[in-house]
Image 1 (cartoon, rainbow, N blue to C red):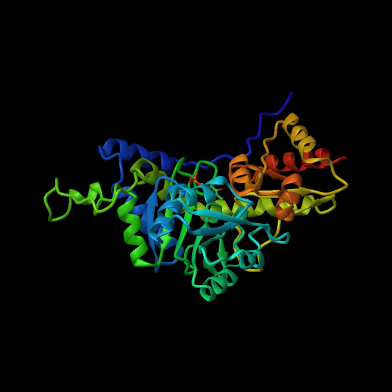
Image 2 (cartoon, rainbow, N blue to C red):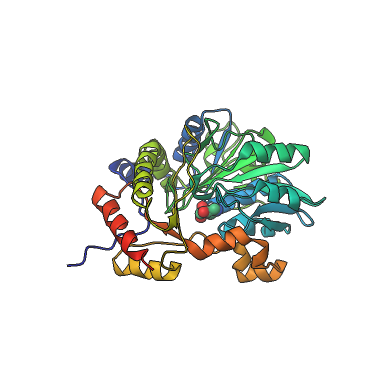
Length: 384
Ligand SMILES: *Cc1c(COP(=O)(O)O)cnc(C)c1O
């Protein structure tokens, strides 16, 4: 008898999320309203305060809003990593600016800060690092560089709740904006959703206006303020990026369990690390002592004495275990490759990682038996 398929990712949705969604449905207020507001307030509190959190319908939207608020436009360059999802870079093109891709560092799989420095030109406007897999980028180094060269920093924190560095949560490190994703397979899942976090009141105000049509207050406030309910002013051609209460209802309760879910992911990562110590593989980079890795992904790299990546993945699939690859680097994607004439030899670390990387299932709903099953399958699938 073959065991049931073990998916690569699954959200942990409890009765609290379900009950809150039902309450939203019964309330009659389905779009952005009291739940979105509460989710934003809770998010700020979770991060430790001192920032504004703005709920949006995706991290892609949030990144677009953050760069728009910084005035990124045609002629500007935004430096980011090739080893990311296309959303990180596509938002730069939305604004008519150009992403400049740099390699990752072999020891962290995060953007190589020395490579950022080498890529800065007079057109550079923003540095856009990605906390890959949920391990924090060396943000003090990025901020030093940005300050020296008068550049803004926007963090793609799609993998990074609840990541810490220097004992502080990603989101509170002093960047112009930090953007989280609540996509279905992320560490905090609302199906679709995201959060823009900023300590800069001007950026907060611009993002708030632009996330809802360039209107100076959102629909819910209109029914509560002193001004007549029908009155609003359009100050810019904004976007439709607001988070509905149906999704925020899920987010409120996901946020409450995000630490517990991270603990479970960390236990699984530790089990994997111990179990794979004697295999011809490179295990994922670890956080510094006392820091939190969100463990959105557990990326194993197959070494020279191991099976190839594609063989490994088909063997895992034959055992009913879902895996994935993070990422097909952007320098390999036809649009980015052709538009910017990108060659793999400019990104040797990312290319090397891509050819050997496989992401294993790691999520809080995995039982000990699931973890053991993955470990046994990995040991078999690794054989050359
Ligand atoms: C998921 C992801 C995004 C996009 O998030 P959405 O909420 O789906 O828009 C952006 N960057 C990275 C690195 C991601 O993994």
